[in-house]
Image (cartoon, rainbow, N blue to C red; front, side):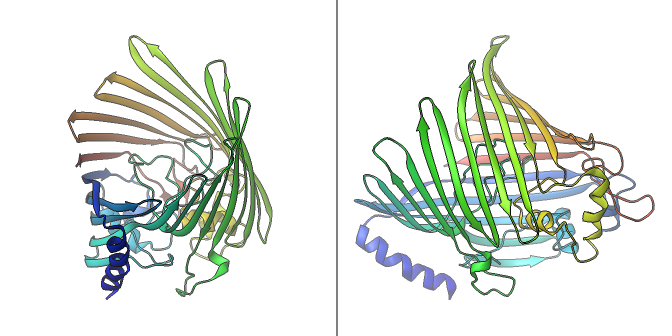
Length: 420
């Protein structure tokens, strides 16, 4: 019935516009190989190594009539393997993110599970469904869509709308949210943007306590760019300021974020520098980024966060809530990340990256290879290697059980994609 009602909503739009265009699509197949060290508590829940096989088909359709347009992105998703089983055994824990998409807290439930069991799920959903108007100076879109703000390239504290994990390999599409988006362009090129995201609470009721309203101003100041943002996000008030400038041939970006919650005030910041050059006849671009997580914990306080895995959170609830909602992916305070993108050939790109927790000395090393071996075909291969001593973020957090850590070992990600 839900899909029937959705179809009835679309028909008048299509009939009025007399346009229904298939834009593009893709099919992706993934294989993931994971491992857990001998002292990992997670081995009590799953064997090692772990194997996961996933598939995703995405179809993009839409239409336009004069200033009006609509878009719908359909997804057919298969998830199977040990990670899905583990995420269900540890449901609700930030330590193991959920492996299956759902609309539990979104305004519209546009996801339908076809079949599922402990280690597999088959579903289809609409990840985009919005209607819009585009004028000379005004843009308005209503429905499920995605918005990305902020100047962080690896860690992005300003992007609190379904941000990517810093170590994610495939960042082609963000998960959409149900929102109203507006933009007004001024004569001088500056613009105002407004977003209002509607959500449901744990009881599936609509509530202003879980919504987000944000207003952003983007300005050009000479050759520099400036961003200022005000937001009410859940029960928090957020103010951010950031910008982009050039320096000696490099591009420098940054943001400062102030967050007021019911329990405390936090200041976070991110700054990065990117530079491109030719090295040995190869095109190379480099990136270095520093992130200060104002909600993060010192190494000596990690045990408080893990203790909240078994009990109610204490003063760490602001950090914990963002970890569980997928808005933050770091538990420490100071992070440094750096990476290169090397064009081995026009069809082969190699991207080594390292993510360092400067507080506890642990790190995650990642190497990603991209091979566009044929027109419309792409192969991705990534290796992740966590490094660190016991009691650190990447080496393994102490669990409170003797000789047991929340730790993961090296992992491998492979993806084959076809675009049409």
